Length: 193
Image (cartoon, rainbow, N blue to C red; front, side, top):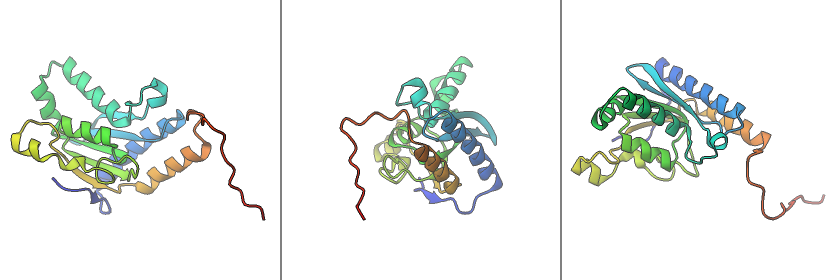
């Protein structure tokens, strides 16, 4: 599998799908969520969207990618697809997400067998596609045993990264009203002049 590549030379399709992911991130921002959004594409068509909903649901696992994955799994199971048919469908899908998938999401994407991921900005604290761990590369055991667990996926970084970073800036500048209150008083480190 490829390591995370740079998205400097993007097709108009890639930019169009990332713009849709940015729109999902803006919806998250409007809902006072960390502004991450995604779309999943099969055969050039968006088949699922997701945005962060951790605050809204009070569930820390409700990241944009997990939302979109769950939408597809539920729909495909309703359609009567078997586990292997669902895996086959994911192996033909591409994910466009505004921020590098965290370790949890990168692991889930690897397990479901997503074909390819395009992301905007790096996730320096929790990134699972090269910033902290490189789960997109899969594991040696899964490549040799063929068990489907953590088979990895192609990954391209830096698609519309400045737009994604701007959304994060907006979120953190407005302050996060849902952040836990500190247990001790904040220390003011202002220097007297």
